[in-house]
Structures are given as structure tokens and as C-alpha cells.
Picture 1: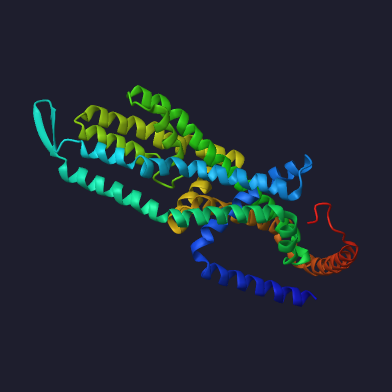
Picture 2: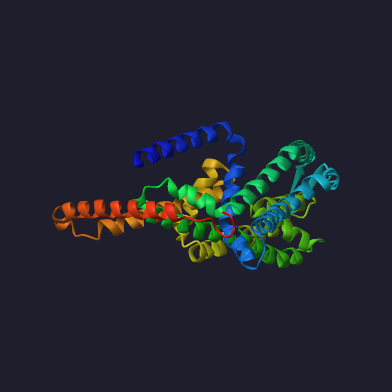
Length: 368
């Protein structure tokens, strides 16, 4: 029976790898949905405790996740699609040449070519987003269905996954499960808190520089925190470029320095590492290694995948170190035979207990 389980487990892993290759276009979406379901599991269970049915609680939780993702994407869609005409008109209204003077020196900057390139880029970006809209809608629907499926069958999925692990190692699987759950919860809290902190910091900065829509710009800056590496620095550079093209070099340098320091850099340097250490239980150095390495290796999904992998490696290393240090090095050979005997006895007892439990198992009240 044990060998049969191992064979089935190996076939399952092989089939999973084959599915990853064939379904590579949606792997990132599925991974993102799995991590969100991990985080929202306690929410679904709390709704279940309040008397909602298993399916209704999963539907409400999945809908909340779907609306949260839409709320993050919507501002970018509005800027690059709905307000595209206004953005292009603003770029085209910039003079073809701008004269800059400082301490008696005067320099003329020809902007005609730059504005033409920027206008073409905006039009191309808006067109690409519109063309990709059907695929994005399909991926959003897939995201919602995967989250719902994992939530509605949460306990069954957990049991099926745990059944692939040998009995003597299930405590390790449970530990990794708990670690992944805590880490994912912390990472999403960190991401949301960093975006909100960026929003709060950006409002007074934009007000001080006299921009007409400071709240809208601050909202866009907060949303851009979900864009890996670049983040709100894209907005700061764009504002500085617009000020420079309008001939206000002082304001351009001011927003570039102040905005770059307080809007683009401060949340990532001050808020994100501290929250990562407290909520995800991950040191700042390891968090940044996972964050940067994940983004550079697998793209946007690396924001979550990178730190998660680092957290799992850290958990495994900690447990390995604990087990290696449990017995002094000089006593390893002395205790080796006794440990082997104890392990065999424990495995036999666990097999017997598992057989009894399987015989006496009854469905949950949820039907899971």
C-alpha cells in the first residue's frame, strides 16, 4: 500500500509538471489565485461559523478577492485607456522647443521629437491594453473560479495534498503549510499597507507642488506600488518630465527629488521591510532578496513567489538545524540504531492509527 501511494504521488507530480508546461500562459494566474485562497481561508471559515453555507461563504470571499483585484487594475486602465485622449493632447500641447536659463547661461531644448515619441508610446500602450482586454477578462474569471474552487473545497484539498506525504513526515508538511500561510498573509498585508502609506505620503507632496488633482495622483501612486521595481517612480519621472517640457526646471527638479525620496523610495525603504519582518516573520534582507530575485526571474508574480520561496527555505533550514543539533555530534553513532528502531516503531503505530481512522471516518458537517 505504501509503495502504491508513492507511485501515485510520483505520477501526480509528473502530471502536475506536464500541466505547468502545457498551461504555462495561465500558471501565474493560477499561482496568484492559490496564494489569495491561502490568505482568505480564515475569512471563509469565519463566515462559515456565522451560519453561512459552505458555498455561499466561498462565493462571498471569492467575490471580495475579485473586486480587490479589479480595484487595483482600474486606475491604470482609466489612465491609459479612458483618459488616453486627454493625455495625448497634453503631450502634443507642449512647445516644440523650450529655453532654459540659469546664471546667464541659456540652453534651448528641442522637445518636438520627444513629445512625438511619448504620444506614440501612449497610443501604443492604450491600444495594447484594449487588445489584451479579452485575455485579461478571461484571466480575471479564471482567477475568481480558482479562488472559489480552492475555498469551497479547502479541507478536501488539504487532506488530498497531505495524503501524498509519508506518515512520518506529515508534521513537517503541516509546519510548511503554516509557514506558507503566515508568510502569504504577511506579504499581502505588506503590499496593501505599502500602497496605502504611499497614498498618504503622496497627498501632501502633490498639494505642496500645486497639482490640480492631488488625491487622484496619490491614488495612482499607491496603485503603482503593486507594479514591481518601477512602482510610483514612473509617475514621479513623468511629472518631472512634464514640468521640464513646460519650461519649469525648478519644479521638475523639485518633484524629482522630493517625490523620488518620499513617494518612490521612503515606503519601500521604511514601511515595507519593517512590516515584512513583523507580519511575514521574514528578516528585511531575506525579504529583499526574495522580492528582487523573484521579480527579475519570474516577472510580476515574483513579488509573492520570491519571498514565499525564501520563507520556505528558511523554515526548512531552521528545522534541519534543530534536528541536527538535537543530538551532540559525538553521540550520533550511539543513538543511530536506537533512533532507527524508534522511527520504525513510530511508523508502524502511525500506519495502524491511520487504518483505524480511515475505517471510522465520517463526512464533515460541511460535506467536505
